[in-house]
Image 1: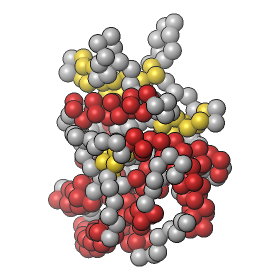
Image 2: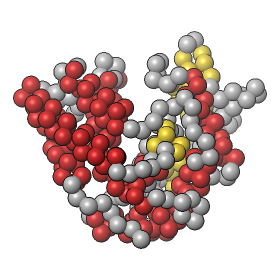
Image 3: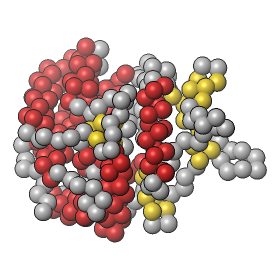
Image 4: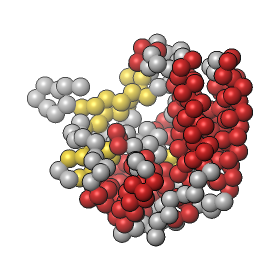
Length: 285
């Protein structure tokens, strides 16, 4: 929003019942702690009393300075090295303590809850319902198997670390939108930076981890979780849209959602994920 004689601000409003005040403040405190270590994130502004969460007529919101920039070039290995270094520093702090109020990233909350909601609320067309039911069950069982063999320690994460939440400016990545910050495996903040075929992804991850491990240890066993985490993200996103479908803004902004074509493509994507889960993980040395 524009302010006469001053720099514009970004106002972020919080939907009722999505996050508690404690959860929101925990996110704010995490980003401020990162900023205090000169890690390039954008925390909310605070008022004269040190409050970052504001309320007006029942609406909760936070104000942020506007950060310019563009999505990073993930084909540039120097950029990947820089991203890895920043994420390594971020995770070094993330390991220092746990979130007490924010949720974790796990198969139940991201996968099974999403799967159950879509079936129970009849979002899946009748012609596709059985395919979705059996495929979803098989996919979640496979995710269970993958997670069971990786003994990882959950840490505080950005949680939604895709290129759209990274603003690149002056050769520096600025991380924004910590709305989905939660406890989970470190690889969650790395895998969304990968693209292309397997050999490309291997080269990209090698570069990211070279920078990352300058500041934080990384357990290579977590590479096994990439396709399981991708599967959970796909299921969670569809349920996220479905849960908000009664909000008039959502059908207007996502007109392609909740059509037979959408669900057919969603099922195809889940089939591809089931196949990917049976492939060997990336190998990095």
